[in-house]
Length: 74
Image (cartoon, rainbow, N blue to C red):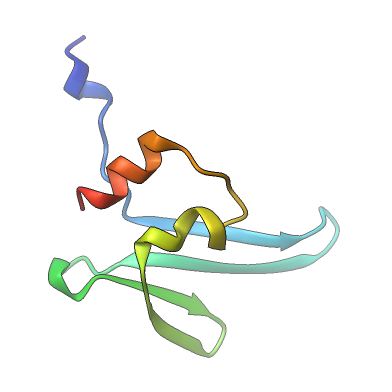
């Protein structure tokens, strides 16, 4: 298969904070209609603009050059 077959553009993330028995879900989503509008955090009644360079930190992940490069290309 061609290399670009496996490439994707990250558009949204769902985060679970808690345990298997209980917890809280929230999400980070890129505006689909206006790509210049950027990303937003949706956390219950909180909706705010979000800087995608903070994805690794805000989603309990580590630094990964592949992820960072993919996000910066959006």
